[in-house]
Image (cartoon, rainbow, N blue to C red; front, side, top):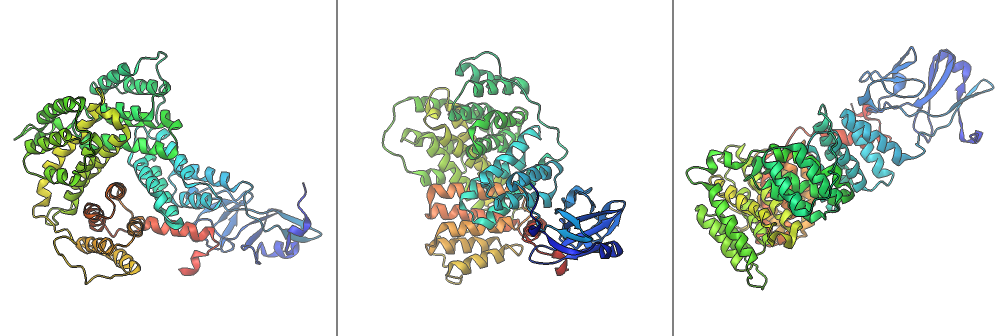
Length: 591
């Protein structure tokens, strides 16, 4: 159908355009660049898509328009860029009528959601930060649900990297936090996550697809095979076994159990990362839908099969053979969970956590068995373990080397993964054949034990033992501002911890504090571990609420984030540039 003439605006005379070579049309619409080149007339958005510089200040040669700010080059006829980092220039219809040039000032897309989805695919494929940021913002503006953006990035990640990576872990962690975030932080979270997926996949070999077996072995056989193939490091066989379980319609909780059982055949495998990745893959499917299980779950098999166990590490074998102690305790726990126990609800989580922080490995394992006899279920043990591990971070002595933060962090995020996995598996973890998953608690308890040196000397927990916080702000807004200001400076670990304690002891809404911690993180060029720490801390706080243990968990999060802030904040600048460009801003005016 022809475009109505009334939709066009006059740009000027053709003679004037031919004489000058270009002109800019202003109005209620964005500025339009009209160019005469080699007998043809073209109309484009006058703002360079890279950073908004006026393209009329550029040059045209051989049908190529070059921006003179960063030398981005564009095909004059289509607006398509030769330099992928710059993105394409929107074009608009142009007509010549009786010696006059008319343009239709419309730069929109027929299907904005689909357009920005395609652009996000391009940004992910070529690791283009600004294109990713604009695509995420464009999709949100077009009404695309945040979870759909997570799904797009997650499926890209598992198909374009041969094995689960840190990028999709960050994506899942931030995907879990999306319900807590306002609009601006949702955009930032999705941008950070998608950008990290792109970086993680850049230059990597894509995943090779494998198929399930043509037969339908029973579940017990599949579990036995998966553990065997993992033990002998036969990745192809392990993946085909898992794919067969998925194809057979195995429920999500049972799939999780199979993977956790295979992973915990090696104690604290890959420093805890193997089990953490399995948990995150399951959580990813919670966000994007378990119909994607055959695409997502096989990505954790490679890292699981290749992982080294703690049994290969001296610290776990000498001076005490912690691996042997765990194996003996696992056998006892199997018998305990198969024996009728007290039916009343068990609630001594904090007391068990205190026992797990002891300096006697045998006594720690005995405490876990005693709790089981008293009625604790596997998820109870996991919850107590996670709180004990959080206290290692909350009490981390800053006299330690800075790199030692990561030891405390790994123990906590592993403990959180164990807890989340045991909750997912549920009562199946108590049945014969599912008890192997509980070995993760034993391994985590020994990791907490080995990390005890990090609390010598032990940092004080603000707000405890009569510690007064009256010198700190009272209003929510003032506490938030002070916390973000603390993240602007180095060595503000204790300041950040005290502000968290102040917020919670005054009874302010915890979600406001969590939002401030998320905002602080999303300003930074944060490392992989910071995203893990925040999400695991929020998860564990949810178990306790605004209680003493809950407060200690968020104190641990704040101390870790403060220890790793501030950074260059280049990604935050990219996200801001993209947002301003899409709103019609001209960034060059601020230079």
